[in-house]
Image (tube, rainbow over all chains, first blue to last red; front, side, top):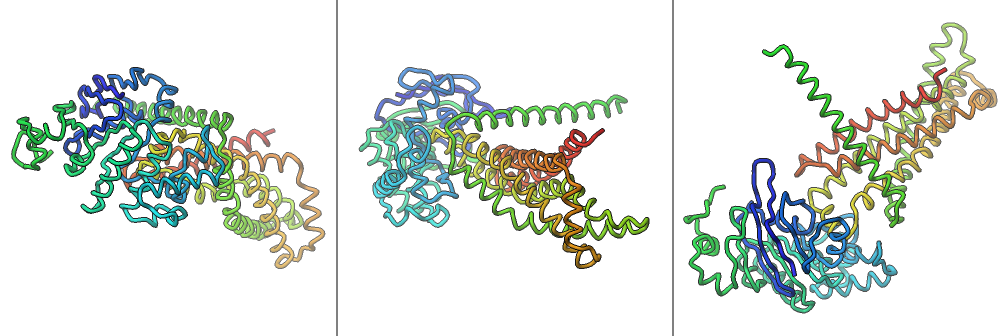
Length: 249
Length: 260
């Protein structure tokens, strides 16, 4: 279980997170929605330890991530799909996917690591011939799928998806959403996805949380989201220019 | 205008510079600690040896060859004014081994290797590849910086040795083809004149310049700003910083080895 309490983070005078509280149950898929610049990416980076919060705590299964060792242990159980894929462009696809298994404490013989990578690529719908290509030789959708294969390579207990469908056409977005949902259910992972794509929200979420003005303003299921009277959530899901959320920021 | 304003500006600039030096020193200490602590990334180390060492051989070799030849011509022209042309082999040897060899190699490495390391790592930073490394339980300093810095310290002295040999060869080629020296006499004078300190200083300078060139590239890349402009600035500042530090370190090491 992931529990966030009072996470704050400012950049200069800009207070991006102003006390975020959020609970994500084991095996649950929570999607955090919010406008561009609302701090969704910063929130996920605070959980992953890539950005240090000014205050507040991140608890995993009740234990706070206080030091490097706790964070390392947490990251060993986590997988991350980055917005732009963040594939290592000097390495072929299979070495990206099997990165954890080519070095460090979980290193496997190369042939075994490669076989594992090919199996994970198949799981995201990519053929074995992709394995030896470089990331730059792949389309955006294929890069996302390779990123997804890398995120699930070690069967993580927790997966984080940062804008998984940004920059993809609607069909490829649908493919990625379906993959994310099916893989998350298959491996029973706890998932946090950040997005402003409502199609993704409906495809992926068990529960939705809206981040606005640095705090979680609303949480509920997709059905509750569709029926909510909260003017912020209603404006966001309608994509309306008029409403309490300023369109020009 | 406040009379103390220029002093305040100078003070702020000095404090900022000392702060930057302090941050770089702490960062370098962390990298060196990663060089000594497992896990070791042998594949990345081998790749760095290839990139820094083997692939720099053509530029280093040609630079040294041409510089050695030009040096022989200049020394001949200068020494002939007081009938000391016989000293060309000795002065070329001293000049190349003590100074020009290591410095030219250091500057070439700063131009070729530092810029490439800074641009590559800065691009990794702006495309979140360094964040991805962290989430894959891999320390960026250990994976990106430690192998490159170690490879620089190991391989640049070898490049300097090659540069020294080719620099002397360049001087010899010009001396025997243009200045009427005999091969045997030229090479014998060269060998007789150089001593162990000359060669040691050359190799030590190479190791120091290798450290500077790789560390500045990694540091600038890892601290790059956002976007293409961040990559550009990191690349430019790393080359400038590396070149200035190579020349400053050269002065210090020359003072250490040869001041009487």
